[in-house]
Image 1: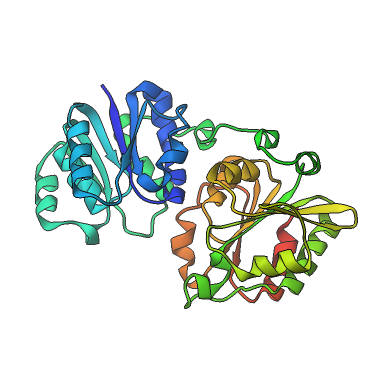
Image 2 (image 1 turned 90 degrees about the vertical axis):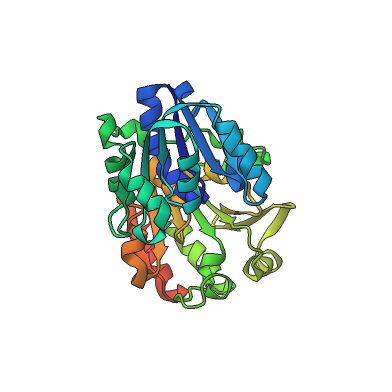
Length: 341
């Protein structure tokens, strides 16, 4: 009989769950694993059929769409339903679906009172409480403990490896992009575009160019810069003042005969492949850090100091993890340089 895994939140949350989905797939067989994920990332993950038997999309909006999903899933009498996200909507969904056993990770503060009564009194429900302190990998291990299975190193390689050459990119980028450092810059580097109460990093173009030149001097290797979905003036100025246009999404800068490629508007697929082939990954609390952990890449992760315990819950399993705290970019850039290999 099949197992349904429910994880209806963001990309990074699904990434951190995938090693445990791999664990179940390895023990139960791919065809016996169905997953339900957020509508926002469904189109990207539906291609990864090496992970699951069936994949379903949880609609962001639309009452009747959600009713249709419930009716569709009620056709199956699952042996197990496992909720990794702890969302109220997932608790309600699990209550309405057929299953011999339901394993649920939940936060006490999010419980609907009536559902709590049902869950605690019904023996088919196994509840693991998230105290918002314990690492996710520890919590997920507890959630799956009754299956008597153990996580393996191979389970952490949660995405299939794809060579850089698989990307549809200009030949000069393919040729010059081996053994590179990846810098992913999104809105989180700029408090005005993210959370205003956080310590601002906000590199200037001059300081950033000086920084990448120092990386080149240290490593003598290429650099790739990728971006998030929020349009930032930072990149417009870089394009205008320093980089040469190759095409509408690719720009190039050269220093000491070493190339720096700025790759704009990347798809999830492109970001995954660029990340898994990098030597160093510099990011600011981005889902790509899970890929760095999966492929044993040197990860430099920039986090807000006052929220350190929260952020570290997500990365306890990553071996090459370097933690830096948010601060002005001039000081931060020197700390990053010390962590680059």
